[in-house]
Image (cartoon, rainbow, N blue to C red; front, side, top):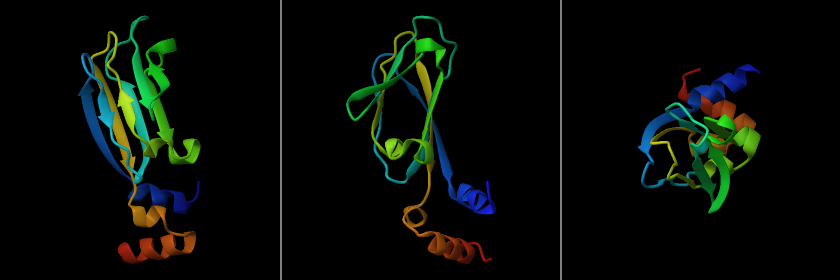
Length: 126
């Protein structure tokens, strides 16, 4: 990790939400500025708890299966997956899920390396 990684990390903002999925699914709309998303079960799991997560209408993961209680997708490890629409639930045996979304301004995502460094320095009076 280098200092530019830290500089980029400081530009990332986070948004935390909790959703009740006991009876109805929740939808996380697509967002091209989302650079990461973490979906987690906020309660203890039993062997029969399942929370389906679909991406683009296709079942991508299930929280609860194999005792998985947290899933994380990021741009650097999963390509454009975090930018897509997610549908979570409804869950079997699980009522609440936590969702953490990580965002970076489009101007930095679209910038070349030299432009990124220049813009960052200017916006932070460096």
